[in-house]
Length: 371
Image (cartoon, rainbow, N blue to C red; front, top):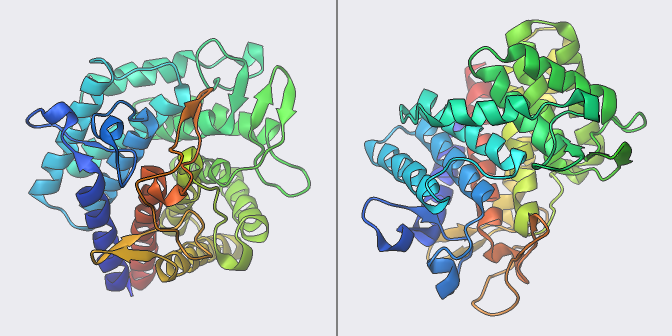
């Protein structure tokens, strides 16, 4: 079974790399993901590029390297890193803490798994995330600089990174405790989006659940404290009940939302493969997490379109994928977020999410076959 998912993950990787990966401004030794396919001239010239989408692309390349190590892919990872910094005005930093957390996570994994290092980047990103911690203002770390919105999409990935990096495990624990104290719905046990100027923003997105699952799983592994595993048990059950109708993770359209379910699948797979413990609740959480990932992956694969023998994944994994064309409204960056193209399947985010899901399914299936 894991070979089936390895093949599907490899095919998904080929689809994204062939359609989306292009040289940055025709420069030798560069590569970024064009944000749409089919693309227009502005896309192709990286007039838009979406920092955090590129971080997710990097993370997918690292997933693929973990599945099937290849010198050629390590070269691609290196090009992606070089080009990210170049397109970002020779800097690793920007104004959004969630963006920087995603890049830090991907950079750290690139170093550990692929042996591709940017030794000056990680301390700079870690410094940004550590210094953004402001409990006196109600946080948490904020979503972006000069902002009073403290949310799960910033604190979750930042916490996962800090749990893994250097000597910041205690801060990661503080972040997990802040989320648990501040953002958990007492009725459903799902994670609310955030808190803004003291008021709860009650939206509940799939990827908020995913990043908190990732953080609490890392903390369970690294601290041995049972309350982190208990939080994972509770949240896996909540996702199963409220965010995976028919066992398939709920979609959120294109634009930034195109990445939400893929991120959730990534961290459900982390639960399935690394949550410690042999108690009944530990086994149940791992089994449920694995089941959601594999059910979602089967459905997304079944409902895909195929162009030139390669998959085009849908924005919603429980229905037929749309076939993107060159016309229609494109994704646009408005007030700190990227909205969807008229046909969401055109967006790189949606295709990355499908690829991420196939890598997660391979990871979950391979761990199950070993166990």
